[in-house]
Length: 486
Image (cartoon, helix red, strand yellow):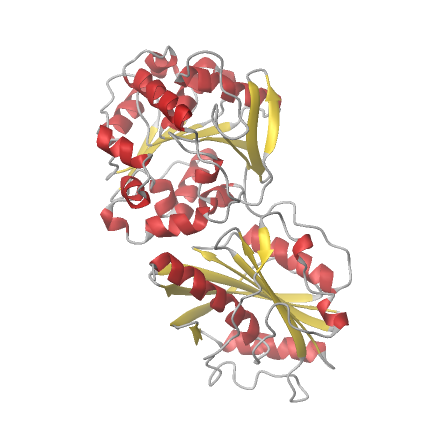
């Protein structure tokens, strides 16, 4: 079994174990019979965002160590409360949401007992499928939901992957409930709170609807009808706008949700497909970086985005540079990730480029994540698995993009020769072990843009944004907020 398969299967067990721990009895599996009045107050798939589905095969808890901090965790009357559990999965793997709801004669006492037990816990051991897991537990400050609520974060490693399960225990009317939101890395607080708020509202008998903002992977694909043709895009979050420009052969679904969702805590993030991909129309005439920048500019105008920050990765960094040159009034700040200058570029090997778009997924990941990055590549695969299935970039578009990139490298794009005219505050960033973009390119770009900042992440590769998505997103957010690195 592969590491990825081990992770996904064990994660399903983890969420159910954590959700069942509060009530100290194995929870009912999804689809099992429950008291109708109780089952009707548990979230239904229709009340979740798109791209979620019910996991009817979720395993029951077993091997739970209740000998210490969770010992005696039952209802005040000494009997386990009646409860029901359902598990949902986004996309093909993670994140995963498990909700449990219990009812008993004394819900306030049950809630207090559960909180007291969890407050005493510093660790929890259990079996997740065939995998022994030890989770560490700490309190988590989240906004209150229901009449009362308390939150905890449980961190663990399975098959070398860091997993976090955020548990929110809440009380409402005659019910005590909890949700467990499990994901690779650290779940976004706004996402966990949104799910907990909906669960508490449903338990109270209120009509609920899918949370408006959860994850870029659940955001619907929309079409903007621009002066440069239709453009397919997703948007998420609130705050100052941030437009993210994808690189060579990539689609919207190439962005790691862990990276985008953190940025969306403070920004209205817009991701889109480049020309000829997905719902986005091809540009008229020969494809070039300048032409893709013009289409990006048309999207900004159509969506009414006022001077957005722009983040471009790889080929997207070329498009972002061209946008900042040709439409400087549209760009407030610029983040160039794995950047290439419009002239004097150190070109990657054609073998590396071919591997990036070939049929061998392992070779493609080796281009993006260096050997020393551990399980980063597999974590990335798991994370982008939360998107709905989509078509890859067509072969003809990839060929056209390759010609456009070569044109930029060789100085045939008008904007590429005018990089020194960029006036937007700029951050240039890359990994020191990038096989597709030598760090010399990033240094060259930074030297051409007056006042720019340069940050090279030691030991990281071309996909440095996703090797430690939370850290890099925090660095980007700090720059966008106008704070310089110390």
